[in-house]
Amino acid sequence: MESKLTPKQSAERIQALQPVLNAAITIVEEPEENPNQGPLAGVPIVLKDNISTKGIRTTASSKILDNYVPVYDATITRKLKEAGGVIVAKASMDELGMGGTNRNALIGPAHNPWNPAHITGGSSGGSAALIAAGTTPLAIGTDTGDSIRKPAAYCGVIGVKPTYGRISRYGIIPYASSLDTVGYFTTNIRDAAEALEITAGRDDHDMTSSFLPVEAYARNLNPDLKGQKIGVFKTVLDRVSDPVIHQAFDNLVEQIKRAGAQVVDVEMDTKLMELIAPIYKTIANAEATANHSNLDGIRFGERKPGGSVEEVMTNSRTAGFSSYVRARFVIGSYSLFEENQDRLFRKAQKIRRLIVKAYAKLFETVDVILAPAAVTTAPLIEQSSDVRFGADRFEEEHLQLANFSGYPSLTMPLGLEDGLPFGINLTARAFEEQELFNVAAGIEELIDWKEEPANV
Image 1 (cartoon, helix red, strand yellow):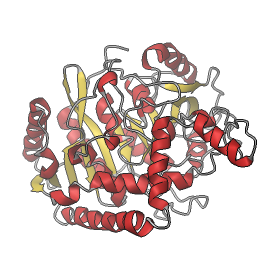
Image 2 (tube, one colour; image 1 turned 90 degrees about the horizontal axis):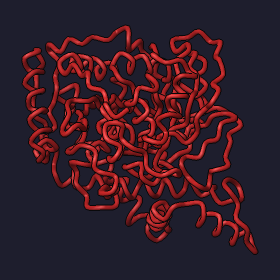
Image 3 (cartoon, rainbow, N blue to C red; image 1 turned 180 degrees about the horizontal axis):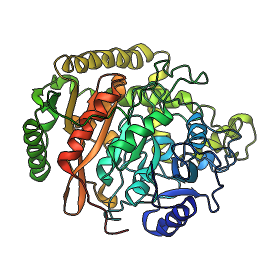
Image 4 (cartoon, one colour; image 1 turned 120 degrees about the horizontal axis):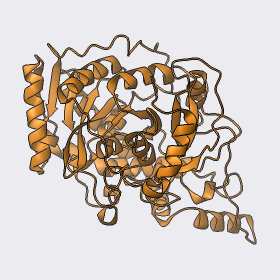
């Protein structure tokens, strides 16, 4: 993997773009030289601000963690450094990963490099924006519901969510433990394949990490689409009303067929699809409530004064969390009340299993499923809202299927509409990242994406 900029130049560019993009929470003004001569030697790296960095403030975009400086590196931070990478910035994100717009970040909304009046998507929006702006060839994010793949679509870059357990989560400030996945952004599929080789692998600090060996994804990359079995997710495609996105998708499918792939439509029961959003909300908010119970001003977080321990905790959490996050904690707490667990949380877990079973069935006749990554381009910041608190539309939420199932999934750019990018999503069976990268590489050759944002 190569970078056009040195780490110092990258940090300077991020700083220069900050008034326009507002995409970084912390910028390392004088990046330290890394003596390691691995595959990332001298490459500047951006990390989402929920990834622990020894000696560098890590806020997860929350006021309650504004003063938190970790005393250790996350496993992924360590691996990147061992490969020669240099950390140059901590990227903006939705607070604690809770959101899909990057509007509720500690420093305010991140701005889309293609048009700063529009959102980046979230929660890994800062990482996506900095990749799109050409500051670095690799930025790390996390994906709990589509937090890498939706921003990738809105910012015109590649976003990869590997299989659950493929990359260690040790040192990551969590959101929802059964859904969280560490992933990343690049600008081409070969870099994406190489990035997984560098970051994946078993870690005894994370008991959910996989023992499966890490494959030579980049060296084994095969873009030949002939004979590939690709399913078009018709249930989602039928809900795309934007004629430009729909036509571009249809044109791509015809190109894929001409390249020799076997393409079939796959469909899923809409009743199950309509349950994606409510099940996600129930499980994610309950797990987040449990995960962040230690952010109380006593064990972690900025402490506010009070006349008792309980008052200190109440004051600290009230001042430390936005109203949006507090609302999610209320929903999560309600689901976890003893009298509600069977009726809400455990029922949601059972329905999740039904959804995953139905989704897995789609892969019985295909190797990869292709769908629009989003049904629109990035909304305006002033007009956008987090759909997880609005009306549920499964065409907006379908990327969460990969989090429910743990399957590897990536988004890549397809075209432009009114100067804003839109993309496609590919998903494969668990731990079949090589198949995912191969198909993506073949499609990448067909699309031949060379667009860059003019605004930066």
